Image (cartoon, rainbow, N blue to C red; front, side):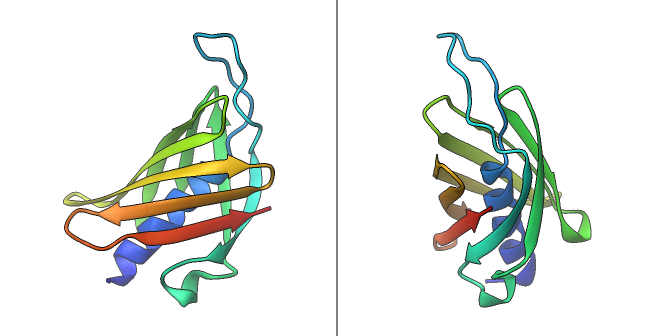
Length: 122
């Protein structure tokens, strides 16, 4: 697994963690997640302990991380998180996870690679 992929996976985890209030078609609110988070678990131990900041507008989140790595995602009223991390023009990482309170647990995968479990806490 490359450092770029690992960085993307971390970014995806961060995006999913920081998701503030928003509405959906059913009138429910998305969990509030704006703020700073820490990587608690990652398939690359070098990322454990790194901080991640997330910005949310509605149920959509945006993350900017090291080396130009960016990500966008959504969170549902029930805490389901979907993220897409862009490492470069040809590399993206998909993440699916669950937000419960101040913890986000996600499984992320770059096309053709194995899963990476990412856990963020605030």
